[in-house]
Image (tube, rainbow, N blue to C red; front, side, top):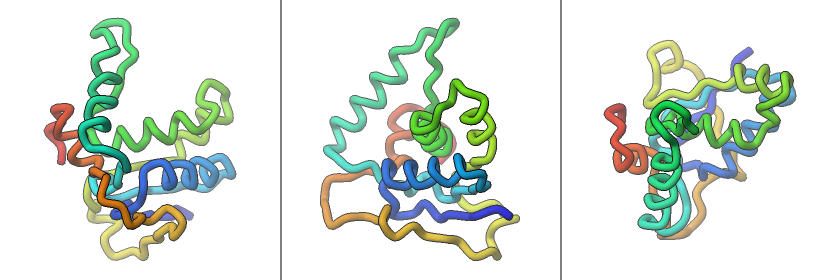
Length: 139
């Protein structure tokens, strides 16, 4: 059984930690609308942090840092699991993230994680805006 989570208006860190716990327990998770996940904090600082991560890598050696919103979310989840161990690698294979909602998931019920929902704060930006700033063509 696959659990489908709608990422709209969820906070990135809280959603990622909830998803990381569940995939480590053996659950398969699909996250849709990854471009609408919120990153809290000052917009300029957020853009500078992600730009620094992308620029840190070298073309041939890495580290390779993604630019698309769905891959940015997966990279955040990857940092919360023991990715260098076999259990973490197997868990990472159980998560899928999409920009928008694919056709096969449009008619299905989508779950929302209540403790990861948006707070009443004015300082946030979306992963779609971050990926657009980094130069992603997928929005």
